[in-house]
Image (cartoon, rainbow, N blue to C red; front, side, top):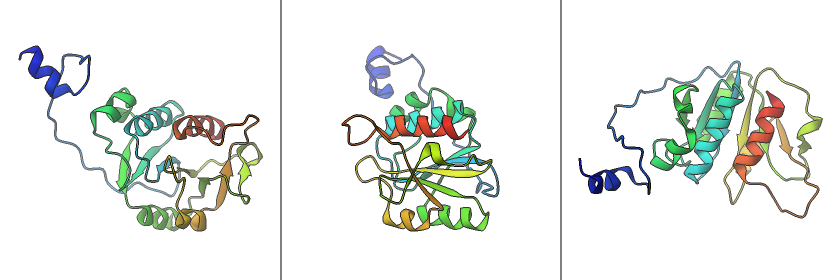
Length: 179
């Protein structure tokens, strides 16, 4: 194909010369009785979603679950940010309520990130073999529903003046600490 067509199809300034249409594999419901899962609750930025999936892969997480309202894991920006990690770590999509229901049914502890007064600094947490780490929306954090359902609220104490960390940076700190 011509370079002009490739540029149009690839949706990036410097495409790598490959464009494909593939049938995506349907993921089954994950087994939330054991393992280390990352749950992304309504994370909107495709770059953040891809970066967190890539980091979960690097931290050897069992799987990543994205909420129904999170960015599309197959958008070109998400795929570029994942750098192939979608081939290494299972990724599931489900509504927040379904995730909570399945985690509770499987006795999988839910650790949810928040800046609330009731949260613990991540360094105070006991090490767990099995858990789900919840990262919230870039602007609003986790939902009030998730606050109620979480087994433990967790935060990263900050020494400087920044109000918060980028969600992908915070996820990286927590995933490597907890893994």
